[in-house]
Image (cartoon, rainbow, N blue to C red):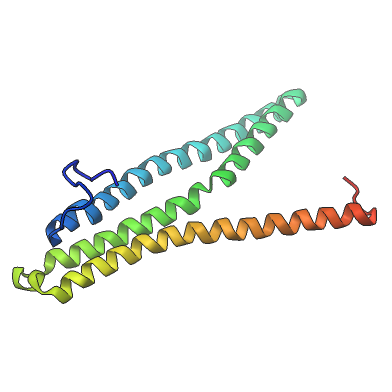
Length: 169
């Protein structure tokens, strides 16, 4: 609760216009900023993988076998980091969130002043905005739960393998 423009104390009544600015607009700006950074990071990693793979191929053609292992390890490290950071998935979620928020804001801006004063439209504005933000957070929580279930299953499998003497690691 930073108060998008520094003018929100977090307690005062918000008019629909201030809600659009402080809540919807602030979150839209956040998603836009994050997508720009994530896209740059994703491109950098992809280009690093391509270039290192090309260097490895060039080294193989020049019979520098010793250095091929280094480029292969660097490609593997970049690929692992890319998977670990889940940049593609995060970028997709943030782009979707920004698009959805832009659609809600566009809908609101298209309403006449009389329609904006209608409480049902104000409720729709808030409801849709909060559902968009909630769905993004819910997605992360679900991913964490799925990952924990998978880790526990792997740990249980390793533990049962050690107990039965079938662990070959």
